[in-house]
Length: 322
Ligand code: UDP
Ligand code: MG
Image (cartoon, rainbow, N blue to C red):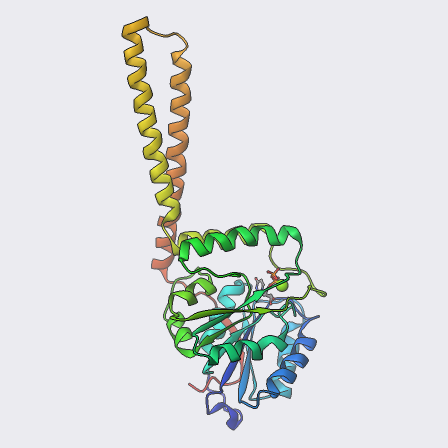
């Protein structure tokens, strides 16, 4: 951060666009072209913060070239390895200096031309404006888990959004400052932003098919992200297990009482041994599940206590002016 480059860095820009990039060499040139074209029309100073999340292709090369061609408007960060989309956005937030911050995917599924729409809504006095993919161009198997997750997130956070998964979003500086104060290592940015926003709006945005490169999210990665979210934002799972355990215990007690009374009436039952086995299995299964969940929380406490950095930057282009 001790580089001295163009005067453009001295003054914070109006807008920062934060883009996580993981092996997007096929998309970056077009993304850059369309972004610059759109942002130039705003007639406001802006910066684009590219965060290379440990790409193994030519992504960083392309970002470096953009930095040379548009010095003062491009800021690049390169991670030493892949840390994930959300840590990459966190890094971008820390580097961003704009009064307004927009996030965007690098794969052109979020058309850059929609950015002015978000900005206009934000200017109406909202703190966070989310894009909402009216017609989502993803496969059914990518949409199905998203629909479930969206429902769950609305329930858990108490903020109903049509689309928690859309990363084309705009935030006011104050929201980003609050997010930057969070030091938890696993998090889900749209949910976190809701916690720090008073007024939240959603606007419909176009969504395009990914024409180049592959989706970086496998089902396993998606499940992990959402498990992070569930345990990171609520104690709902552990409450549910607690209630279920209590219910089963009460039913088991009732059943035991019934067996005792029956013993006085008709005498001891022979097959009862099997029933007891069944009850035992139910209980030990429940205990194991409960233990695993507690273990998950304890593991998370351990991880937070360690305070490992969320990401490590290898190289940085452009001066953040600090
Ligand atoms: N991404 C990233 N790190 C990752 C996975 C994804 O920086 O580990 C970036 C990726 O380059 C893209 C955005 O996050 O800009 C969304 O990823 P993708 O398009 O693969 O997700 P999907 O659209 O399938 O949800
Ligand atoms: Mg995508």
